[in-house]
Length: 448
Image (cartoon, rainbow, N blue to C red; front, side):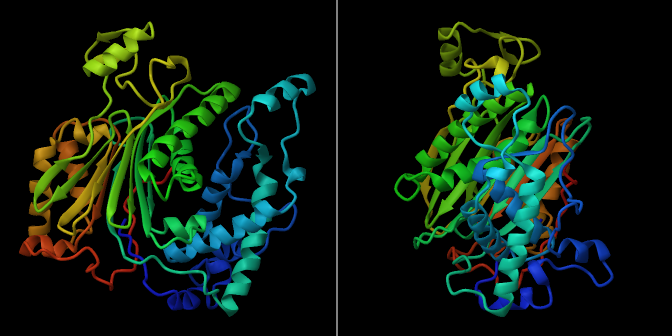
């Protein structure tokens, strides 16, 4: 996917013109046109299929924001516009009386005890989403006439190349997030521009990775320390997401877990946080800058922590916690807590404008491609493509597969400078990215 954000909100009016609800669809696309209308009672909704024995439920505002951002962006609305529309519609939805959507108890006695422990209020997704679509319709109808002055575009553009494959595994359990309009999605009005990027590598099912991809950034946005301590906000967001997913896992008998790595660029500072062995590296003037140390059982400090809790680390084709998991920290893995910790690490680094790009990837990539080879692979691709980074992530994934990776592979390259400048060796500033790239291209597999 190639993501680039418009600079001026004036362009958004054109996106809304004759595209009610901000959702563009091709002429003759009846399904797209139908989805752009208010949803009356009884009208079908396109929701993810629920697991057997489970109802469709939404837990809290974080997942509401996820539901809110999907429809506009899925119809090619510019990311900042989609985020602003979603924020406005979700805000109005949360101001309404949602008591009618509260999940009805299945067993009265058990429900009372359960509700006392629940970290969120569970809502019926089908009715809630129907109401949300109607709110979104109303917002777009108003904005079609005039986009409010408060709906501002991000201060800079982001060029991002993403590719993900299932590879030889039966299921695709990776998830990724590319949120160039972080402030717009959450209604943050301070002058610090923010963008968020993340990769989550699930195991034992996709539930934990899907949940983390929907909630980590939402929790970070609501943390009061976000303006003063963004790294701390990310760390707490991971902890809170793990806490909430563990409650969900116990309630729904889920056994999955996920590692994760995220990068939040706030102004001229990069903040990263991670759990497990998904990794992020920074490349600066062709040199790899190490930002983190992945959480693996063979690390001395991780082994000592696990053994102090009464667990053990053993070698069974690789180092594993209690003979099972090959990572020592993750969201979820309810039956391996507290040995598999949900406490993330975080770090920050000032950006000078000489940085080339960030690369976020799961272990399916980094297990076979060493850090020191990344810059050479990217540079070779840019030379062949005459400075175009459009398919660089695709080539990196192909390189990992050729080297024997059988795992799911996700690679995200976030350019911090114009890729063409990397060939010239120029010290181009961080704000000098090209402005003519606005059409997204996606080469990731459909999510299950």
